[in-house]
Image 1 (tube, helix red, strand yellow):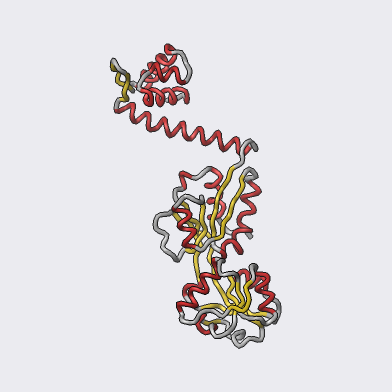
Image 2: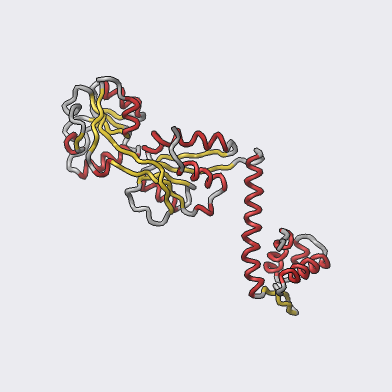
Length: 297
């Protein structure tokens, strides 16, 4: 059965105004033309969609069902129009993300490149937050998509797998722990560390765990980048905790060594989180599709 968008909009207008004449005036369309459209639509369906009263019109049960579908179809058509405008460069689309330090510094840059190349109309805003704050931002609809630690309680949002992440100790090559291969964070807390500012999500996470273990980190110097941390470790200034992918990137011959942390919290699953996939823009849904797919090589 064929439905014209104009017919569907007319149904919505009649229901909203309670009157065929007021609905026709708001289109605008001639009253006779509006009456004819409604009559033909009811004939095609084989059911009356409105009850006619002296003081107006109200939907029948069949009309209420038709209106429910009409509103969804018209809404989808409007979203399609907006999406096509964006694709032709007529409109920019903002997509908001929040992600923890590990995701921002390791997996996201590589994963986002193909998406941004395929959707040049998108302006992507990314905030770095601890995972619990990422969750709150998604719940509050402050961001469209979050990337966060899957080990925390994710009640209230829909999640999809993103990547697996492991934290390691990055130590000078001649350090007492360098030859161990594995250790617990508690075994390293007697040594000086180098770290990022406390406001960085990963640094706060590690320092919180050290406090729980009964011996806060001794941080000799704080620097905002992983590269600078790796340089300081290589010069013997202290130990640091890094994502394994970052540590492997910066490991230089015998100057530094990677020691796997055996603490259960050091191995984490990163997950994508959204409040309601169906309520996202077409571009934000595509972003979720790209990020939840296989990791690029």
